[in-house]
Length: 324
Image 1 (spheres, helix red, strand yellow):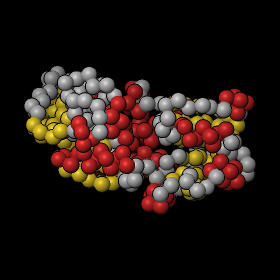
Image 2 (cartoon, one colour):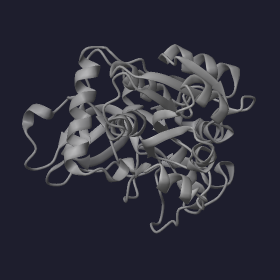
Image 3 (cartoon, one colour):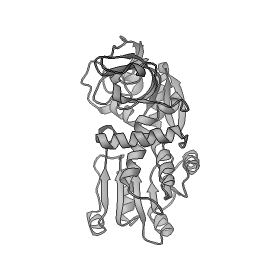
């Protein structure tokens, strides 16, 4: 099968290769998926650059979509030829979705409704599930002011939609003009240009000086400064799923005296009950065609270097997708 892989950490053009690998065979409880698309997420390029390579080679990417073309023992025959999307394709395993085929446990191949194309299916495992878990952890949002950082990002675009469905008034940060437009298209009520606006002051002005009720955050290293300046009200909820810096100082006194509730999660490591709840809500949303998907640049597999570099450049709008 055609696949892309790397055998050492480094820059995309230095370590990524495209060629032929053996086509895998499913074992008991597994399915083989003929992939049509592979989603490229920021975590994929960070792993290629820095996560220790403990296998002879790594086929990158955790997200993708296609159809089941082979079944392992114990998997119901009815699943053969089922359209599916994947989660955790390359999490704690060597062979991900940047290939024509992948073998995964049957539970990691989730039914993809006929009304959802394979490109959208490649945006679900990380972006959509991250958004669903983040909004769930933020609690009851009806009538609340919610700050969504990175509202023009792939994950943020889903978060804004979900928060609006729950009745929130959404304040969203975005920098570049095209990402600002993307955030507004998802339903942002108050757009904050983090490159030009005094964000914390704008938030307080929009909330009668109280701060927002909740923050759903992609970058702890920046948002910690907003919280220190009073952007989150007392007893507010701060949900974080990412940071541009690994060591982040927090205004302890501010957080303590305001009884801030700070919640972290890793989408790869959701508890089974949380993952099941997210997947069920996502399936309902897909079936009802209630989500806008954010498909960005698309590349053939042989151009995987360009795909990784597009993600690393930080300027693309939407999910980068590889067609297989």
